[in-house]
Length: 560
Image 1 (cartoon, one colour):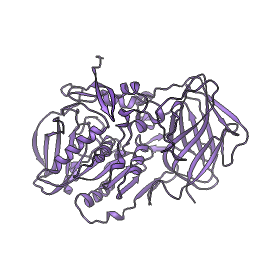
Image 2 (spheres, rainbow, N blue to C red):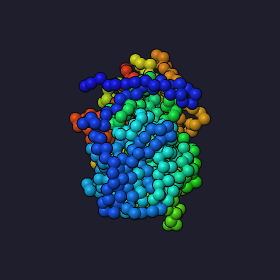
Image 3 (cartoon, rainbow, N blue to C red):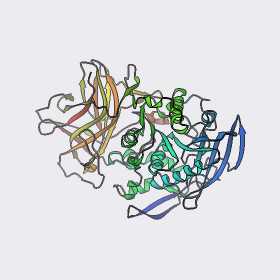
Image 4 (cartoon, helix red, strand yellow):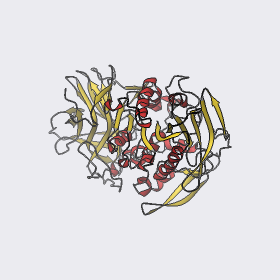
């Protein structure tokens, strides 16, 4: 493999001078790029006018290119923008609609974006740009940052000025296309009037590459290595090694969602890589017109399903066309309550998230019995496992004697010690077991999901007291607090939000170990993984419970 071409540049972010490492993108003419032919022109098919590779100037003179679809001859119609670097047309990633039946999405749809074959026939334009630095668009690709939001601002205002547009623009799409919506809307483009982020985090550092302080470089590396463009792309793995702690560079990759005041229809799930960030984005929105729907599948089939397309169209019809269709009567929150081994509840109406009726209770860990107890454990004890052995772990279970629903944010308080190292990488899973103790996993596209997850690098345990709550620890990531031999420290580990039902006799299990897995690993040939965690685990992890070690699981129970 040829050496990767890199360069360095300096950026001033929040008065901090940052040296940024960038990696050369695959040139569009390279056979490995997957780049569609650069072919400006117009085609009309099935009543849809398709304008290709239209040049748009950004604030600094850089030119990006976009495709535009709209009903031929239409005037005074709204537009939906889907911003990403994944290509304007279908096929770049080879698997554009995972879990979606063949033929349900037309070749007009870009990866994870709205399908013009649907939206144009309902009186909308669909705008598919290649973001700055992607494919033939000029410049360098800066991932998930305020600069990307400013570019979106310019494109949105350009779209609103087209002679066919009614001056109302929305945004839609999932994953990157959802993340871009947080950054774009925070810039407050005047003609952006509604957004629909489907499964997208809002804090790149905390929600993706450094969850709990543990660096994960595999997923982002694969994306960067195949990125096509004429310039360079942020070399995120290199920047992770250069700046492992929070600084202005990473802070700029946290969207200012609290600035968003326009209507928003947010969609989340409990099993996505975007789970925590999507819920967080919804909560931080300042808009008085915001809705949350939490589904029980995975993002792609949910986004393209006929019933959800119709639901989203009602939202856009209300705010992009001004149709009084009763959308405001839609429940502000619609939850799925998972019941592995049983029947999930879908779209249960609620008024808020998290639920106000939540009753938090502590379940105390007992290392001597491997159980969880509703009463404090008096006797001190400990358990240990080899941190580098993927077969070793510590488990704690409790059996419920009546139907029990847990909905919201779980927190695990541990007292931990490292035997043979000065740091620990802890991975936690909360699972449902049947009456006999067999795991009842959530199913994602037919693959088993491990359960509600949390993780922490112990040296990153410092909490930001201004943002932390009893059930939701918020880490500063400002310093490392390494462990001394024999030192026992308390740590709080946040578990990503979940909603699950246990029936009488079924059990809850907490699993603690030095490794993790994903349902996506089941899809990878030969047992590989697209995720690569750079761990510090060595020697044994010791978990202390009982007495002065008040190790417990703080659980959000729902009243029966």
